Image (cartoon, rainbow over all chains, first blue to last red):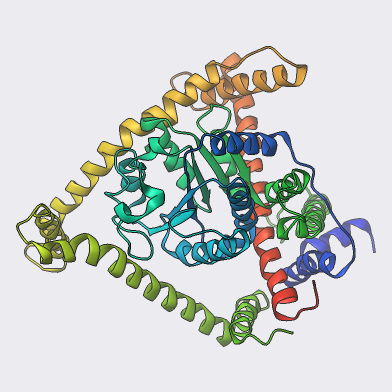
Length: 291
Length: 209
């Protein structure tokens, strides 16, 4: 078989073979003893330094969890890393969500953390639940949190929750951490940071990373995607916050192998297209006609 | 292998979604409709119990003309929205739309000017050309690339000569930006697959620790 015929056949390959190849590329590293490790980048360390500075102020920190089950694989390691960091430093934390399907996972994470660190609800942490109309809530929390969250997730009025004493607006917390699978970090910058000027740290999916504004100082820290999750896990092990890395590091091998497979398919597909075009003659499409 | 029935349900539904990769089939259609139905029901209940009742109905029922009496305006706007389904008065729904748009734009325009334009321009103009060689090069690309990309969208002068060459560089900068976005998208999608496979192999089948 000539190279041009080979690449031509590759470019006509049934897409189900490609799905199968990606499936194997992702699954195989889990079944082998190979271990991949991430090295914390400067951006990841910068995020941790900013978080460290916020945790050292003595004020509570706010965490807005805006991801549902569909992006859990990417954002769960980031959120768990931040939670470990907060509760290990014995800082009080106020959690809430602006996305309806994030409430159930957040309750579960908080319940696990409460068991692990022996936390008391309402004193060490609180979950305010879900608030609608994200833009108005972000903007409104700059002047009054109680106006948008009358009571917490368990139905207790905010005034009766010990951790909420002295916390009336966003200026009363050390920083806001937003873990989001959507454009909410961008809206936090627009409706929160721009008018009220607090510190914002963001963990987001990789697909949203290019929308955000780190270099302008509008964000104090940014962790983007599973790769950043693996780096943060490595950093937390390095600092002794946790004893071992988690699922983000576990996925590094699969991610690398899947990316290599995708790159190979892109190269082979393009080679097939160009070599096939050479055989057909310039300006002819794959059926021999002029496009 | 897991003995938890919830894990089994989740695993079977996951396989149902994946079955579409082979071809469309009734199992996938069932899972698809189940997801849409569950999501709609979940959202309806969430909004009903977290927004509609506590934010509107309960305060008005407790004291119809008390401190929250302004909520009657919201009720009125809800009725205006509903007018779009009644022939003869459907134009009244435009009043509700106008009310909503005016509030949204009033909030969005000044904050977007501040966060999306002024801060970005200041960030681009205020870069430092000192430090290590890679920082200087990076900042030079940031400033030069921004100017070149903006030139591409400058249509008051023909893209010829120096303007044309700069605009062409701008095109490349935009393409590199789109490429970065696309590669980040691929990374995200792979991680979603990793999450599901880890669930199947570890939580369901138990063949991975």
